Length: 364
View: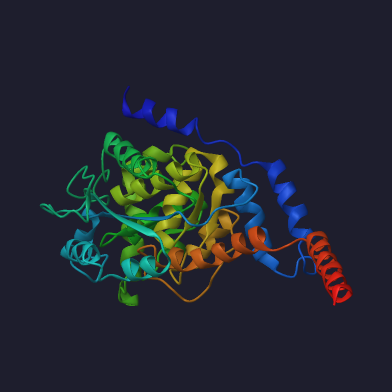
């Protein structure tokens, strides 16, 4: 079975969420011992979690964040203020527990996995980093395709395999590390949402605003040279994407195969979500937007996907950091739904307590 066939077989396993269970969950939510709809979007989240997971009591204990790492040939064009070697340095730092995502993930009680799918470096004998390497970074997309179609497919399959190998997943997110990766993300966003390169281009990890016009021109040139087919997600990924973006797309697909909720982090995660939704339209119903990044086009990406962010804290780091924080929100959504009494249950319990109290007084 070739890579195209493998992906098609995986996609067949992503079905619609359980609408009937959503109806049940809404009825239960409205019956809980509180005025109806007073928990606002927490109630909506609980209903969606039940329908996604196909469970009358949605789960939130098994949390997974997969941080996908890769380098990008387009950094040759001066689109990032940081040298490519920072990718290697940060992933090594993450593996030692010293990165933002490892700290926030730990406090969010999530399992954080680090996956090297395309870093321009080997990590010898580092048990904290999964070796999923497909290539030592992409090629410069401003001069030709970022990767071959086979490499793009392999990156997606790598992300799927990571999730499928986990014993249990209820809340899943994908983070990233890759110097220069807002450039392919902006290109994907521009192509798939209809934004101009200028509208889709932000400062990334801190690019001098004076250089934004150059970055937008690199994106425009990349699209014009490669002519990716917007109706073919694999073609888009291969020509103007990144290996870690493909792996993140795979994480989303694998999570949906496991009936797990999928939390989108920041802008790069949003670009991966655009591709994943192209491959599996049903996946849109599995998505939660963890937060809204300050990166310029992230809100437009979320609106295109029909999502409203759970948080808006001015974050723009990436790595999966916003998704980790939003896991607390989804925990509250599921926990109140699972543990609260309905009005009827509360009244029955109160009546029983009253009868016990009466009996006790008579005995005395």
